[in-house]
Length: 329
Image 1: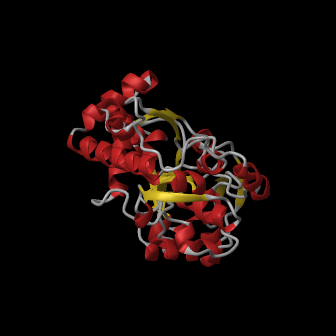
Image 2: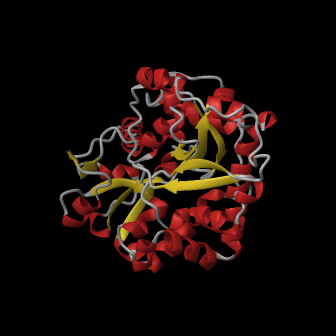
Image 3: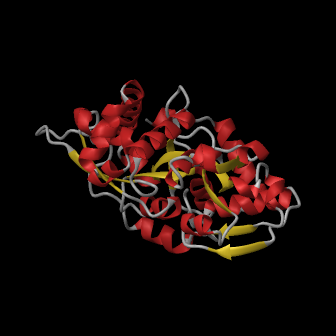
């Protein structure tokens, strides 16, 4: 449900990024000579919830501290906002979507992927079952609760064009449009389908979810990101961060309750709906795949082609600008 504004003001961002480099010595190790950990900021993509629990388990287990990082996490305001913060250097790491990385990169934003968390994109149309929307074609004539500028909105517009479909009406809604869907102001909204429990804990009984990937729009989903400068000057910290995430997700898959407990300790507000949080964690696991943070040049090329063809990314760029070469880690 990343209602991300990918129409980035990149000229300003690139200028800002030039002045936001770290004062730390390039290539230093995560742990200082005194044995202290280095503080880094990790901006998430959206409101903190069960799908983020493995990150909190990684911190609780000390996976980052073991290699020298003290990671501070904060809720995001959408993948586009997170991408901007990372590119300008105000956050060392971010969780953002492939759309924001590719679209931003095509406009000169100095951001790149450190590894793909969601191997496919869960963007979807979500509706109440009584609307009988079970395919992309079924949205024709329906009222679209839109969040203009967000990446799911842009992907949806590309699907409409590809399938020669026109919704009956488009109404702008506050991100992500859950209230408008529930009250009937919108017949369908764009949402991350694996997070439908956020709309209705009994979503299997009450909602229909139509995934964009099932209509041929199969691209990468969420990814870890950093700036070009940080990746170049802090390879050890980058590797430490990646490994901590991998260990956190591996441990969370073995013991999901431990991950949810770690989340509750850090974010007590998640205690109020434990069933929803578990569903969100399960939904994240559906997209991570067996090879955590795997990414390939071919798959990034495929993702970029879809976004360029849809007009979401301005132009294609060399794939090595999008993903961190494993040789550089």
